[in-house]
Image 1 (tube, rainbow, N blue to C red):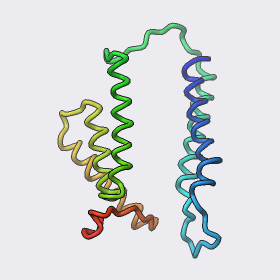
Image 2 (cartoon, rainbow, N blue to C red):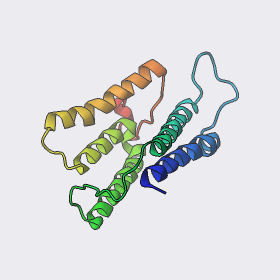
Image 3 (spheres, rainbow, N blue to C red):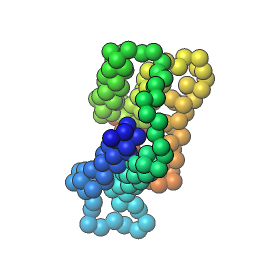
Image 4 (cartoon, one colour):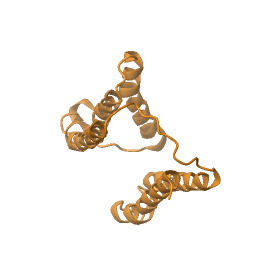
Length: 164
């Protein structure tokens, strides 16, 4: 089995598991939803189904394109230990995001996570773009989802007095 086929299968399986097993169990759906309010499981289900569709698309493209055999893979020269370290750093960053969430709220925790992920890529040259992405991006997304869709985000114990 080639890597693109395996990649498509893993992506499709992950999002199918999320859409059809995890979302129905872990996202409660109230018996009555007033007016035009979307149900709480709408966005997790939408993202999961979109991910499933993209995984299936990757699978179809993997079968439709001929894959060259034994083509050398170009990397940035990182060793296996360094790549494992990067993955561990990502896991730690997401763990810290989940740990910070109850204390500083969704907005500040998302800013910290975005900054950590961008810095882990090694990018340091575009400081203004990094600041816009890490601080402006979460603010704009939070404003959009709050005002356009009425989505409520968790407020942290430390940031509740400030309103974010």
